[in-house]
Amino acid sequence: MMTLRNLMQPAAALTILLGSRILVSAQAQQQQITPIQLHQAEDMLGDMRDALKKNYYDTTYHGLDIEARYQTYRERLEKSKTLADAFRTVAAYLSGLSDSHTFFLPPRVSYQAVYGYRMQIIGDACYITGVRPETDASAKLHLGDQVLSLDGFSVNRNDLWQLEYYLEDLGPKPASELTIRNPLGEARKEQVLTKYIERKQLKDLTIASSDTDIYNLIFERERMRHSLRSRHVEQGDVMIWKMPAFILTDGEVDHLVNLARQHKALVLDLRDNPGGYVTTLNHMIGSLFDHDVKVNIRVSRKGEKTEVAKSRGKSAFAGDLFVLVDSRSASAAEMFARVVQLEHRGTILGDRTSGSVMEANHFPFSSGMDIKVFYGASVTVADVLMADGKSLEKVGVTPDVILLPTGSQLAEGQDPVLSRAAELAGLKLDPVAAGKLFPYEWAPLAN
Image (cartoon, rainbow, N blue to C red; front, side):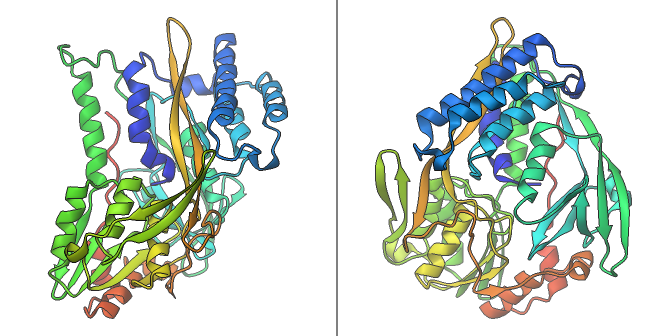
């Protein structure tokens, strides 16, 4: 499942990997915590506090007493039975801010936990939107199944990201307990086993080494980037551009926009797009507007700064624009959609977006002497207000045209949202054909 944390991980992981000699195993996470591990967890908690004090954009911390909270959670750390318990305590210290971009990045684990399914909020319900082949999930779950509960917790729009953070980053579990309802309305319970894949231990990351560690790391990052690449289809007077993340270079954006300029309409699919670079966002906006655009107002400790996207002028795409979003469209994807709305540049279709719009930096840390453990913190350094003076945080973008796929349509592989956007753009594309244009690509498994 692609989240804001997933998008940040490639950059964060490289920092962590370059110095790490050992990784945290699944077994170590569940074993009785050692005094050394407890001391390291205390270091992590202290670093999280210091990162907030030095960098968090709101020096009042939304009225939260972070020092008193630090003492409370330090006491809780002492009661940790396992390393996983300790990680969850460190994460909970930051979660009190209820900030989508401020969270704990625990040490990289020595394994990959493959749950085998993807979940997504559609409207107010949660559905299975992907099932990975050759996993236990593939025999028990189906596209279009509605998830009523996961491990005893109800699954809703506000809490799903916390459940995913818990499962993916803080304490992967050997099995998931799901209560499911299929498109026919029949409810059932399923236990889905997690598949664990051991990562290759990294020994030497120097080019001079005869080992292949550095190349394995490079290839892993390249495969991840491949899964986040833009894809496009040109049919008649319409170009459909699937943009999974705002991580393109100016040259890559220019190339795709130049292709779009050969058509009368552009359908830009930002569904499942967790955001990315501010530079890519600004260049995208400048490439689709014939005038400079006020993107947002950045509010930090140093004051306010207005962000303006410079137009590419006559090189910008001037045709009809249709933008698709959903509950996983976050950060830069949301800002882009809202700019289009405020400027009356195009039509937004789909589901309400994530409401995760802040600006954060990653701060790396380490603990230990002979053997170091590397971890990090994502800390919001600026609030982001749109040109109308309003924040999208916890609000999101409500589309001009709300379209929500049903469980039955998901089960049949239909994409009614893309089909409708294509129709508005002047292209006949039935929902089944639309669902086949950009098949989901599972991220590569660990080496």
